[in-house]
Length: 263
Image (cartoon, rainbow, N blue to C red; front, top):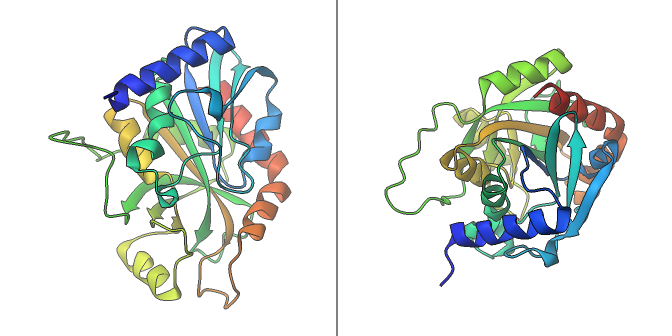
């Protein structure tokens, strides 16, 4: 049976062959609302997920399901347009396969982005927020066996400081990952707030744990697409997530480009 690491190495080899680039430096996972930011970068190569070992077509609207290789300054960057979510039922290994593939492809830094609900009323839809810490509320982990990874600083202080040089107005917050696919109830949002969360969503945390285990330096960024359940009394729907991303596309693309250039 092929191990998770062997599958990641196979995918990395396929990326090198199809892109013509033997080594990549940085990987970026574009979450809900962030897909349009990919247009800020000229494409060196583009590969549908289905053509890469261990990957599958995106199951979420607004995720194109393509991997792009782009050049930013002196760095080769992998842009993942979409991710596998835990609620798709394919297992935790599939959720973190892209992260492990990035490490196998040579990346030393990883940018994880997502669209999320915000608990801070000052964060209007379209506000990007740096992730400074997380709560894993999925009741699972991508780690197997005695892999005692230190999570004291999952999200790099150095990279957050670098991001602040690009946009000094960025706030920071704690992100809580729920398993989904249902949105959180108002009571669950209140619980998350009591536990210390500022942002709630259905991704990122499991990938961050796997990335930390693989030795990657991580920058996490959330796009607040809506107020979390119960804060406004309005119903939640995925359309507003996509619309918030479209409305903020120019800012997100410029922010991401500036950060990657500074890395």
